[in-house]
Image (spheres, rainbow, N blue to C red):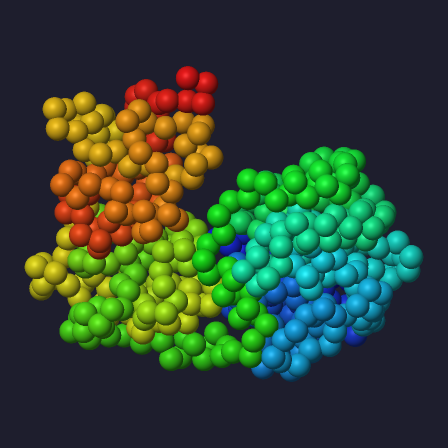
Length: 467
């Protein structure tokens, strides 16, 4: 048996390919939408991908099940409680898919979603009775469990799903042998859980001992625990969960339609018509010069998550990128179902060299210079765009906190007649925030280069949770 984990860091997403050497057959579980990496691995190991499983309708990304179906004829498998527009084979408790010396046995494990399943993996060359691993989807993570509140907009209460999650963990997963490997669908940084470990594999025994949500407790206590203090879910989560159940264009079709060069006049025409201009360069490059009204979300960070948070999927997106990175910019949008790309500025910022009147800059102060400005007779309004949890730990005295994901809805709370000085942890989110504020008409917006990390490195005072 071959079991390969593919980990996509920007979305903290883990997918899997399980292959059988004897029959040269493979299954892919919870694939990302750009599926070439599975083709390459299968070709290297002389495998044919015949099956594709979704453990549930993911909310934070668009899965590649239709891509694998359309390109390879792979059969799609979903939990028996799933409802989808496309054809699929339903899997209920005890359903088995077997190829060669590989057996995949289904456990229905609702809780994170109603249709969630886990897949118990048997390597029949090792044992026909003891499972080798279990692919837990978003039911059980390393160090955490799936949040039960993401289906509220679709009519499911977090309390009801939390009760189902408790039952799934206690009656389906915890009875597995301690040695069974645990392979979840997400890792640290995913918003599908609250405190997921950076480790991407564990065992049932280790989770039984260390996972806070698996300790002995009543169902009522468990529900209270897993429904409290969950981070805000980006607005695209419900959209993606629904889209994963729909028949839709493949990523290749979306890219063929949207990934095309545009001259500057066409970009300006689209912008005037309401298109969103997305600059995917790094914050330092964006600060030096950018098209007026553009939004900076750099490719080096959680690009897709923030794009899905601050951009509209209803309006066209025009990309400005460093040459050769236009495709990456569009593919990573496509991973979350943002197929509304209208094209990209031909030659990137070089296309604006003869039009300096269309460009703007964002000043980025060093931490010592920012401190001087803050202590001046006419200080700027200091704006902290980190999460409330980060801000509780430490912040800069005199700052106001508006998390980046709330900025657009709360922008009227900020003064337009006073300079704004924005900071985050390291400078990535502050660049997004500054670009949004400039687009919203704030004329004097600067950033603290390097964020609060640079502030502390300069030995400047912070207000901590202990003070």
